View 1: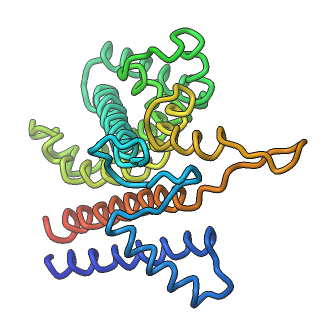
View 2: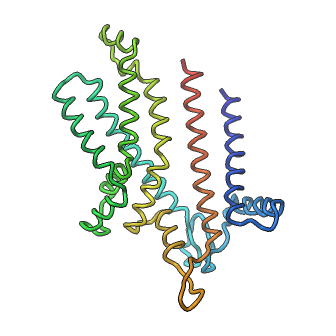
View 3: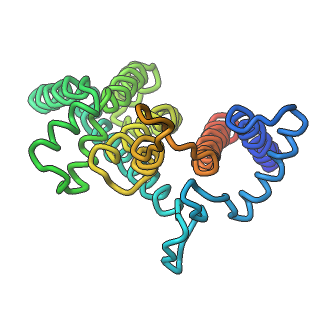
Length: 290
């Protein structure tokens, strides 16, 4: 198992390096691939040291600004705000979906089954609405003064987020519930959930990791519409709001390559770490823990 983990960690660094290189080449290609590669290595070294360069207003881009220096732009807190809200939203959505699917499939009470099924179907129907529509509707009612509980609800529901997790989970749980070993366990009076634990854990990891990017995009859209601190509003503020005049009749977006590269690299690292962690956990559960 240790050798497997070491190999996955090495693959993680290779994946981050070459994905970052692809991203850097698209944004900052310089005459030849060799020169671009050398520039990327220099940029990556500075990125590891926390030197992200300057933005268009000559502000130093850093991860944390403990001194509250107005000449520095800290992206760390915004990054963690977005990641934290994404994680909390996934946990809330997955927990609610698990409870409803358990009550529908496993719990043996007709009234509870019907109520859970109605509640789940209603949420899935609302979930068909795009996050932008939901956010604009809530914005018209509460403006920007909304609680994080309501924000999480919007993120969980919008753009089929709840439906993606709920429908996949329902299919996996229903299929598992009909397996011979579960039927036998139920016949003997055993706790069927105990026998489902390993399979449910593997399926749950796949469901959560598979839906992570959908929740992340929902969070960023929410941040833009409600102007909340996070990667979404940071990108909106620096790539859509700020313009410069290039002629008397037209405008163009300010180029922010350093900021965009730093944010992109943070997202690449996050995605690669999550995928590696998923592979390690699933392999452990399937091959090592039998």
